[in-house]
Image (cartoon, rainbow, N blue to C red; front, side, top):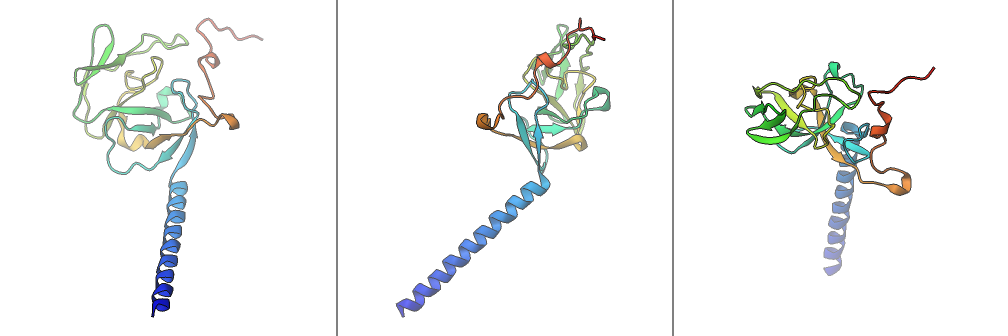
Length: 191
């Protein structure tokens, strides 16, 4: 009698491991099919890359997201920023170009980019439904502080970004570009 129970327990345990294994494989296939790996093309964030996960539900404050920047930004690659303002929040700009969300300072809008291009600060606005204020802590970040980027539409959010760990032994650490790769305002092309 004990042998029969032991054999039945063994079959249940084996079946459990098979179900667990199939579930893990299915999860990995889902993650790789619906997710993508993005290499960081900006020095304003310290990571070398991000794993893009599907955006299920609405973003919340603090979510790191990848999004398609407006065509006027001239960027062929997605931007990575944090959600700092939600629909209904109030964005205001002080005379000294300090940008605030619901009265809390999030950063200052610069007057010019690193290469000397003039930058226009976002105008005072209540964030409408389906739009988000995105921000990165780096002072040179090109984000919703500027009219050129503005408030990001929900349909332009590509998904949530998970920072990939540095792997120095593979040469994967920190951003792959730096401020030294952007010409300064006095840059002159050589023939």
